[in-house]
Length: 317
Image (cartoon, rainbow, N blue to C red; front, side, top):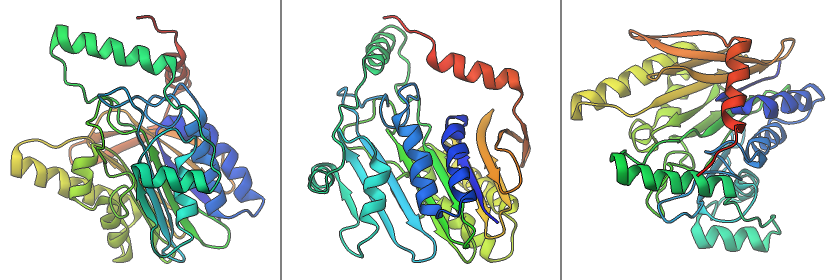
């Protein structure tokens, strides 16, 4: 049995290709890397890789994380600039037992030494988004932090190995050097091949506070289904944040267990995610909070068409 799950509709094409790799008997590590690279390379997704939205200084800083649930190996990069595929660098870092989490200049030196592709990650389209946001901030006093849609994925291969990975450009107009949950093991991602894997997207500062991906896997180990574990973990953290300070940031999670069962929970409207399992076609689902539960249903073709239209529409300053 093989299976994949990923945050957001933007993961669909990559997951579709990666599922074919799993069908051919390739490893979950290869599948995760391939699927996430597809998102990183697509310039119209504003929150990951090439075309990702910049920080407040108009610099694109990227984060990525990778974890092998069979060996517990993990690697991560944070605040790395001008390298095409941070997920591949994170995966490479996981081969070692030390120095496997690198940031900023250190991560860039490592990537350069290892021969990873250098690439200017700030696109003209992203520059226009940045300049428009600066103008709106002055005119309408909007908050700058919109657009934090991390791609997070979990894959189970036919050998039973579970791998989790993430990649993001983080919050739009974040402070230089800001790091969210995405490259933090247990926060943005976690995998244990004996149990399952989970990954998160939303406001990293809040997701980290609940060690949310680890908590989901821990609850699955205690006997909860992926859906029960996701829902209970999101509900608990959402309630804790609201009790302690009056509000909670965006919290969305997905997970699969060692048998390929999946789960999702969110506290936002129209969170999308992708599931591809052996014997099935890849499906994009929409999830919405309803009380203390999450309502999940397949996205309509109209929704799918509009999603892509909105992202590739020409923009003017």
